[in-house]
Amino acid sequence: MEKTTIANEKTNRFFVRLRRIPGEHWYLATNTEKNVTLDDRVKVPDDIKAQDFLIDQISFFNKQIWYHFTRDDLVGWLPKRNIRKTFRRLAVQPIKQATQSDIDNECAAVKMLLMSANAAITDDALKAAVEKWRQQSDNLIDLSELIISQTHSIRDLSRVNFRQLNKQLLRRRPVVIKVAGLDNLKSSLIVLTGFNRKLYYYNDPWTGRLESISQNHLRKHWKRGNLEAISY
Image (cartoon, rainbow, N blue to C red):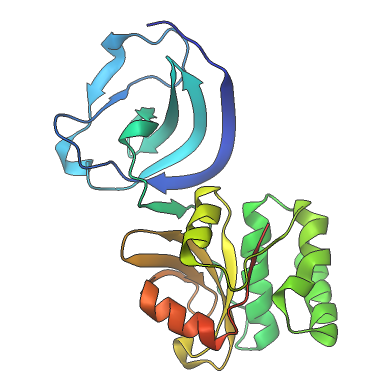
């Protein structure tokens, strides 16, 4: 097969799932896109077809886009055309807030956002910046000085529709959302990390875990949080 690489991108890691298509799913069983041939095609085992595949690299070769994956002891390349467009989950490590205080909730949420951009900010510097923000405002977009200093961009996603939230997640960037009533809290921040047809996935600083919520319930809690959301 002719190799026609035009791009090769290391990426923030994310999870995908395979489309439901007739015939067998296969992958290229190689750790590099060099010298790929049809002989490298291997059937995806049936017992993992419906599970998540961790992607760490995107490349273009053999005239199509490929995702490099690891799954248990399997390593290889999946064709993008065989990946579901209705599922995406970012590999953002959940962080549990240090105490039950609002500022520790906010620091944990913002830290997850910055970590996804490989920002190098100390916990003390982060807390000082969040404290400064709290003294001046309670609007998420007013965290712009901190976010831009660490990621070189900010995106105001307040009051957008869910399609735009999905688009940001497909860009491999998590979203910090202000909610109210979740975990029986008056107000808190959560970090959206993914979606499928029915659910949204989010890291909850209150529990320190990856959680899921229906779109309707997310809309209700987000609306109570004044529909505020930011990313980078």
